[in-house]
Figure 1 (cartoon, rainbow, N blue to C red):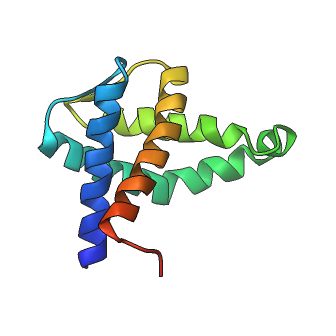
Figure 2 (figure 1 turned 120 degrees about the horizontal axis):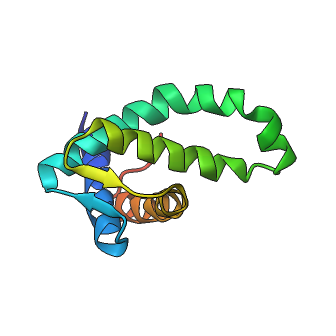
Figure 3 (figure 1 turned 45 degrees about the vertical axis):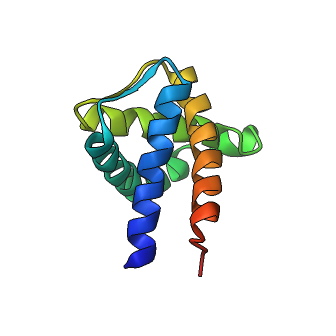
Length: 116
């Protein structure tokens, strides 16, 4: 349970950092970031595998690079579900999703949350 909460908080902090780095991303506050992190986690667990399966031929042709587009779509979809969290533009969402992953890996590494 401790790892779950630490991962959730680290994703919320990562979202706040990304919102400060990119002009096209807005988060109203930390509680909004917590909700956005929860929705993003659910979307990555439920919706992302379905999108990956549907876009598998395109993903194979692009040698897996289309996964970045799917990540951007998931980020925009999560922003559409949470009030106070917005992401403008698909290209910005794709770039933000890449940087978000890197920042989240760094924060979870700093907090000592390891994969078991």
